[in-house]
Length: 410
Image 1 (spheres, rainbow, N blue to C red):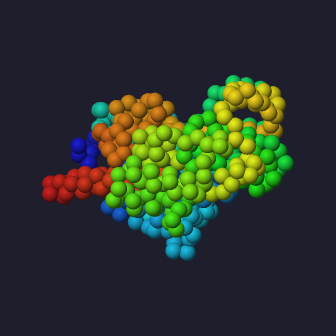
Image 2 (image 1 turned 45 degrees about the vertical axis):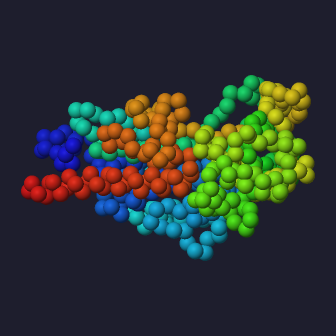
């Protein structure tokens, strides 16, 4: 595949398309920024296309106020630029967004905002990726073309709204966590939180801090671990132990220390899965909850725990164990999903079912014909950084090789 075009093709591209010299990157979250920065370091230009009007829109527009990085900053920094030394171990949302803005500025990331990708497909005739976008609220469309397409919209592009019977009949407030900022508006209200991941648990704690009366729905077994143990971050300790011990042994150690610190969580309605937390994460991608104080509120009774919802009523909910209760609001902490199948016309690389690369980490970053993926590892910012580095190096190798061929031919 030649990096340079004939005069005839150049004329066609100039007339019909916006030609991007270098890769098109879809998504200006941490994954997209990391790829752009790594490419810049390799001497390769790129263009980032983002549907929102800012970078890191999930963090800036769809996260609650008390959010912090759940893992220590050393495991969350993007390639080529560490966090400022004065930042705490677990930076706040504002600090992380500030870091990303400084990161984009430091590497001169070129971005187009407010354009949603409607369709991306490989044109066999041109030998290029064609990316069609629409300007938000205007219907005005553009089409970009490039040799390379990097999908960096990630695992958390669109909210998951579960189909729960009766939810449309509920007369109180219903909001996804993407629309939740703080518990201030729920002060004195009875709130049921559907979902018991890190967000659901932390929202319940936030509600308690604002004198609301939260109930959390724990339908499935869940691993709750202390954020720190034995004087170190739990995640950091795991990474160190895995250098020396098999995952099952590390899991046993984690669960033993957790039992010493938390006791038996089953008596509070929090059953543990049969597989250990690390093994379960590796197999299913399900992340354990790192406790930041919610468990104490559950033990004290400030947060109630109920099993799955059977159905909602106009005033509350009926649960699978036969109990029922009235509520003023429902918060859906039901997570997000990839939206890639809705716009990428390539079923070989990405799964139509979940919108993730078909090949798991560490082999899910490269497809065919110049197609790449970053931010789909189920390993957070660390996994995204690993893939961003690989993608940039691979594209740079092609870019430099063809540039050298052009130079030798001139």
